[in-house]
Each structure stands twice: as C-alpha cells, then as structure tokens.
Length: 299
Image 1 (cartoon, helix red, strand yellow):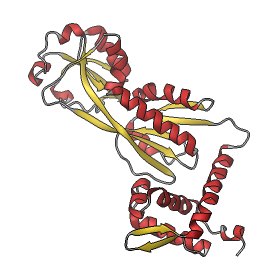
Image 2 (image 1 turned 90 degrees about the vertical axis):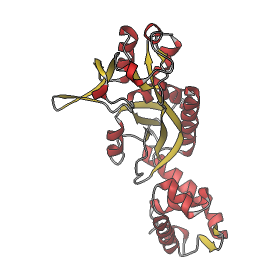
Image 3 (image 1 turned 45 degrees about the horizontal axis):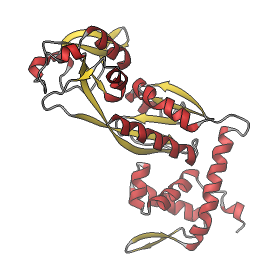
Image 4 (image 1 turned 60 degrees about the horizontal axis):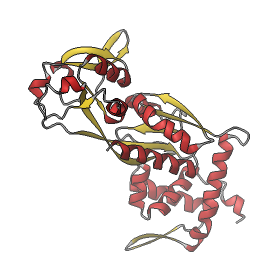
C-alpha cells in the first residue's frame, strides 16, 4: 500500500495516543497521561493498526513493546504532528500562546514564562479554577494552570508540576500580639480580609481553602482579587489567608509575615495543562521547567 494512502483513515488522536504509549512504555501509564482508561488507549491503538494495516505493538507477558515497523515509523509520526501544529498556527503568523489561570498564578508564572519563551508572544487570560475546566474545549487558550485535577479532553495533556501552599498572613505589628503557633480561637478576634466574587447582583465569598470558614471569621474588608486582599491586609493590619506565591512580594518587603496556626497545613497541586496539538514539544518543556522553578522558589 502506498504510504500516503495508508494515512487516509488515520485519526490524529489515535496517532497521539500511540506516541503517548511510546513515551510512557505501557498502556496503563499512557492512559494516566491522557486521563483516559487503558481500554480507550487499546482501542485507539487497534484503530491505528487497522488504518495502517500493520502492527504497532507486540504484546507479551511483560507488557507491550514497539514492533520494528513502529520504531521506524515513529520519527515520521512525530514530524507529521509537528507539521500539523505549525500549519494550524499559520506559517506567516508570529508564534503566540495564551495562558489561562487564576490571577495570582498568572502574576507569579507568566512573566518568567514569557522571558524563557522569547520571542514567543504571551497573552494572559484570567479565569477562576471552575471556569478553566469548563473552557478547555473552547479553543480560547493553549495553556492552563490548574490547582485541582480535571478530566483532560481532546488533545489536552496534564503535567503535575508540584505542590503549592496557602497560609495565613498579617502585618508584623499584629503578628507580635499572636501566639506562635496561634490557636484558632485567638484568630476569631481579628478581622479577616475576604476575597469575594460578584455575580448576578450578589457578593459571595471565594472558596480560599482556609480551614476557618467565612461564617466563623470576624468580617473585615472584602476584595475581588487576592492581590488586592493582600494589599488591604498589609495597610490595615487585618488577617488574610491566601497563596504563598501571591504573598511572596509582601513578605520580601516586610509588609506581611506568616502566622503559623495550630494544625493548619494547606497545600494543593499545581497542574500544567497544554493543548499538545497547538503547542510544540519545545515550548511545552520550557513551560514545564519554568513552572517547576517557580514552585521551587515558593518553598
């Protein structure tokens, strides 16, 4: 069969699934990378083998290995995918990416990503965690920074970058009057700045992950972004619970200090999600390394 004719019935998603199996070495590991079931991976490989009319994987008692034909064809598969990505971007258009994330992650990550990716043009799209998950299939952005696992659809791939932390902060003056570590009962006498969202004419507290729920805090100032909430806390001496990444500049300027609290240890995953059909492997790797370096600096 002519080579070009063999590709007429090939699905792009099946080809990418095969390359995931090659990278990971097993069907199960590839399924984890793609956020699908092993059965879906096996079906994709079977479809691809049927379309090409030759075997890709040799299955044995120790798992799967690539056939000699698959080993020879893999560079061609990778080159074909890269050509498609370039065609989709447009040969005469400047390379650009849109990164969607909550505001504090964009502030901490995007400037360093832009520097590492130069001359790639970067665009920031501020979205809350829930909106990110709902928008990933709409082609509004190529990269997302997530703080909780979500199902990956289409050509999206997820990398676990590391763990981030949220902590309690206040001014040095207020902190001197609190025990270390502070009991929760002592915190209830100090007002909290509360991040809020405004929708349909109503103000609603943002789920900030604080072990002390808004209903049990003394109400203080309110703000729509964590950056403004931290600024309010630094100027007025109220408490603020928020991401350590967002608080770093305030800590460095000695405007805020961390308040250790008994039995509080709040951390969460940072996940880099990339549409691999629209982002090259080189850019993907640079994004992953830059995000990991920022996470490391937070420790």
